[in-house]
Structures are given as C-alpha cells and as structure tokens.
Image (cartoon, rainbow, N blue to C red; front, side, top):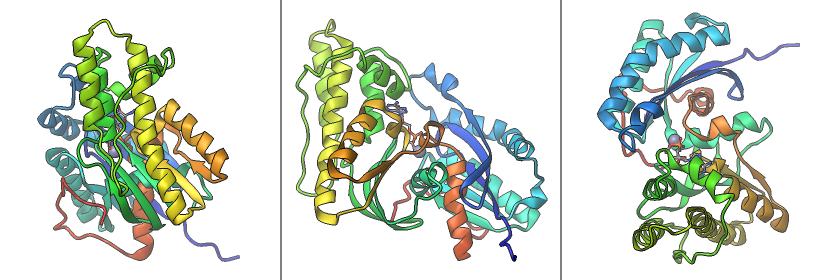
Length: 333
Ligand code: KG4
Ligand code: ZN
C-alpha cells in the first residue's frame, strides 16, 4: 500500500530563557526535545535578564542542535523543514533562534517556517494527545501570556479574551518572590499551597467580556505580606491559587455557555499547576466536557511544541523567506 512519507520538522525555540531544539515526526511524535534551561543563571537576579539570556542562547544553540540530531538518530539531510519561534518574546533572545534557523534553511536549502509561540503552546497538546484535533476552547496560561481562545483549526485561534495587565505566570512569580520562595515561583507556590488553607480573602476580578486581570490580586498579596510579615505563607499561596483559579473558571464557564465547546484544552507553563488541574478536572466531570493538558515538560517552553505547530504550516506550504525577523510583540491574530 502507498504510504505517505514521514515529515521530520526541526523546531527551534529561544523566546525567553530556554534554548531548545527538537525533531518531531508528522507533528505528533517526538524524536528528540533538548532543552537547555538558563534558570540557574537567572535565579541569582530574581528573574530573566534579557541580555544574559541572548548571550546564553548564542553560546549553546549549536551544541543543542547537535544533541537533538544525535538523539533523534538523524542527520541534517533527513529534515524536511525548520520551524522557529518568530515571537512573542524577548527581542534579543528571539533573534538568536531566528538567525540560526535562517542560516540552516539557507545552507541546507530547506523550507523555513515561522511559528507563533502561543500557537506552539497550544500544539504541545497535539503531542500528548495523539487524537486531539481542533475545534476546541483553549486557555493559554503562561509566564508571559493569558489568553482564552477558540481554536478553529491548526494554528487558527480566535482570541476571546486576554489579560489587561499581568500574565498569570507573572503573578505567580511575583507572589513567590515577595513571600520569599524565589524564582521561578510557580512550582514553588504549587508545592507550598498543598500545606495551606483557603482562608484568606483575595480580590477576584470580573469583566463583562472574557478578559482577565491579575495585577489587583498580585498587589493584594504584596500588601498583606507587607502588613503582616508573619502571615502563614502556605495559606497565602493556597488562597492565591483559589482566587486566580476562580478567575480562570469564571471565564471558561461563560465561554462554555456561549460556545458549547466539545473539548477544553489548557496550555502554557501554569497549566502544570496541580490545584488548577484539580479544579478543571472537576469542571470536566460537572459539565461532561473532556479537558486536556500537555504532559509536564510540554507545558513550559520547549521546541517540540514549535515543531508540531510548524508541521501544520508545512502541510499548508506556508513558508517564510530569509527576510524573517523576530517580532517581540507578535499577536495571535
Ligand atoms: O510557558 P512558560 O514556560 O513561559 C512563557 O511562555 O511565558 O511558562 C513559565 C511560567 C512561569 O511563570 C512559571 O512560574 C509557571 O509557568 N509555572 C507554574 C508551574 N510550573 C511553571 N505556575 C504554577 N504552577 C506550576 N506548577
Ligand atoms: Zn512559553
């Protein structure tokens, strides 16, 4: 029987503090996903320092690429296309990946594919759930982004709502910093909150549309901690998780009523959070709608998700040329 040729896409991700290169087969099967995290370097400064991030990417990217090929057991000749994060992200950090991808594309004469990092986060789910196909309702919750979108097709997401100020992950990281947990704060809050009670009232922001806001709750936590430095940190973290999850659930429930989606998908670093997952699992049972999350490593920044998103552009023949530039504030639409 005639069999379609396997398509191997190399994904390149360098939008923030992870240099990652991956080889993905047919958009769904990870052959390698090398992630060089700079977390230890930035921890000293309490957050990502853009200039240091760019320099680190430059130093390691070639080694990361060689490891990705080795682990996938292929050579550069076997690759069908090179997908790279075009934006959003830190301009200098993005430029390292974009320049590297352009050089490879030119030298190998292979198609170059520009990927929106947010579409990449969504695509992380296609790898974990081999049968998942659009349409679905998707909540992208990460360090830099908070979006509720209606995914109509691969890489085709209609924005329903977004944050008006801080991203949810920024709020997690800031709260962790003020209560003394360090950077990156999300996983640390996740752990400490398991020992706490939901006994502190924190503001929950509502809008008439699907937008979010996390600056109010962030400030409230900072003020409470300032007024009473001996406040129980575990209770504060747990109450913070309760309030932000309520904000997420409010908008998702509103979207369920208006759009009747058959599937709900979570994506982005914060979708690793165990409290949030627990509440969305409850919502899934209550509304009888399946909820999907990427496996842990595919929630946070990685290149496999970029390769998967790039694969669907490859199928459409949507290629970039060598004028491709990084777009730090790239939007979804
Ligand atoms: O998706 P990501 O790697 O980067 C962006 O594209 O922004 O997300 C990183 C964010 C950080 O804010 C980190 O604190 C958060 O994801 N995060 C978590 C957890 N693991 C990572 N937040 C809450 N709970 C977690 N378990
Ligand atoms: Zn990300």
